[in-house]
Amino acid sequence: MIARTPTHCGDETCPSSAAAGGLIFLAHHAGGFDKRDYAHQARAALRAMGETLALSGASLGDMVQINLYLRDLSGFGEAREEIRKAFPDGRYPARMTLTSDFLSPDCLLMMDGVAAAPALGGGG
Image (cartoon, rainbow, N blue to C red; front, side):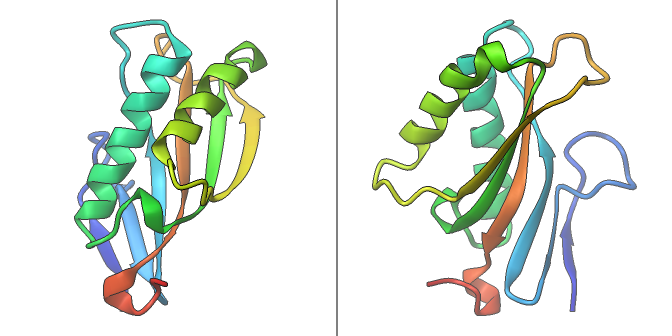
């Protein structure tokens, strides 16, 4: 069975997440476009991911992998520090970091990833 959460970006072809086989696959998450600041937007993206995960009974602590997409590498240190703060126990998910252009000129970063789904037998 595949469980999908409603879209967070207004595009019905892109659910916020899809869960199957004990895993939750998160679509792109972003936010904080009111400031052109990597740390601010990273916090907003992580908060949005946490909200989406909560819909499936999971949390950021269940993350297995995060993909961090940056407009340019100058924001890497700030974004990495926000990821460090989001996982205070030091149990970080695997991470891939790359650069990308985004549809919105105000967007500096996006994140997606995979989490274990405790309710589907994937936690632990």
